[in-house]
Length: 257
Length: 363
Image (cartoon, rainbow over all chains, first blue to last red; front, side, top):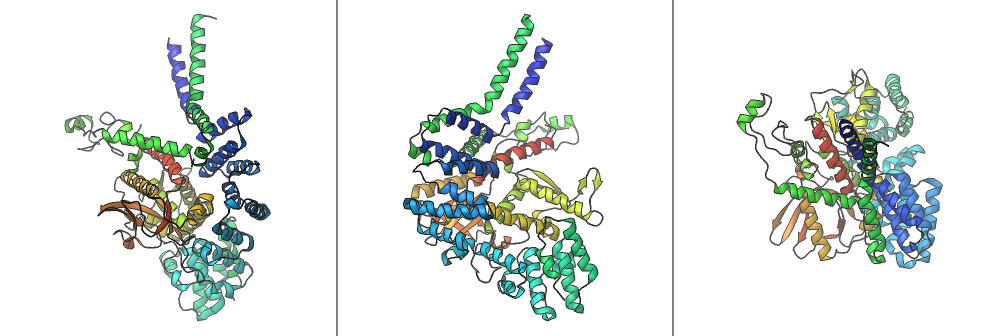
């Protein structure tokens, strides 16, 4: 009897483990069972794949989201595949993304009932990088951020600086402030009177932060018209210790003379 | 086989089978139901598993609310020990002895767990990030919406899941971490903390007293700003988001009224829901904000918005509103939605908060 009670209690503990099996895995298993029966019509099958893709995306499970959206995309059926295409585009990069954008354009050309002016505007931006006036409120910031990054990498600091709005800096996060300050000093040199990062530098002078370390270099430069080698090395060390961080600001900083 | 051994084996098989099917049964029948629907019915399904889970918790919350919350008896408290509070109500986050209030009462797996002590949904400065969304950072696109979605997600997650404790210090493997002596480890520690919160896990944050103080520190601010842009990217270019951005015409009255009821339900259940909204007749003029309160006034419901383009003092008197009339018109707006991710996040957060609560009460 004692053995039985012990086993029951152990197994009820295990039953809790089984109940914690993720909903997505259970959903996937059940859809797979339906699919394997071979009786599901394609117009319903695509929606099950879209459901799986959607649930995976919500779980930030990009691998499974991609898998099921790709399965949905490949089914030859008259149902609207826009969800699959648009979400796949958002999940991919580089050449794979370019191909998807091209494929989606062709899909909408063939299936005009699923197309509209707004989608055309969005796709045009994805294909050409040219942003329509209507699209600016939505993607204008992202578009400008991409352009800014390209210009900084290309060392076109004047054009990068020209993108920025000094009125929009004050209440922004420190990475925005330091980007503005750095470009301002690179372009205008010691004529610059004010650094937006100065207040943060004074409050947190020893902060382990690339923004504060770069600000230290800029502040010293404005006072002495020279770049402190020690401060520059300190910035370098930060990026050496944190290789996952984008180095483009540091690379630009090294051009300050 | 002896009878005793047969019984044990059978019990094992029964329990194993039942346990294995415990999760699968509901989903299995739901899949069968979906497959049997006509195609129009299937087309209209939104997010589904997560939607059902949210509804289940909502139902459980409503039932729990009907039960009166007992007060602890003073004499019983004294009998138990000096550490107990003199007066204690058996509700979420109560610090009562388990003999007086059950773990389910103190750490419910319902939306009551979102009602954290001394936490306000009204923007008060402390519960806000120390930087706004930066819509006007770029001169060529002065009227963009910045990374509003990311800002709203990060703010909401921290307010629900972060437990600030200024008296504690960050530690790793028994060692104290400081900016001065172990700067990279200190930074990495907080990077890990931020990651947990964004992944819907209740987490203690040592060394800081509030979200505002935490996010004011430049090391942390860099990490959070990066997270804001990532969360924007994860959400803003999805099919669901674009669908809203492209929909600038008024919604059907029934849909708008349903949204109003949904928002009120969430606010009444201690949530500050995130909404995505497009300006009427201005497609792609889309913004994402948090909703922290509502009031009923002369045939309309006025929802108070925490708009990340503004400071707390510019939000805390309902200066920014979403107004839905009793006829189902949303003033000045086209499509407005509570995105699907809200349901899934809320479900995960309830589970995480209840677990965190129980760990602190020996449940």
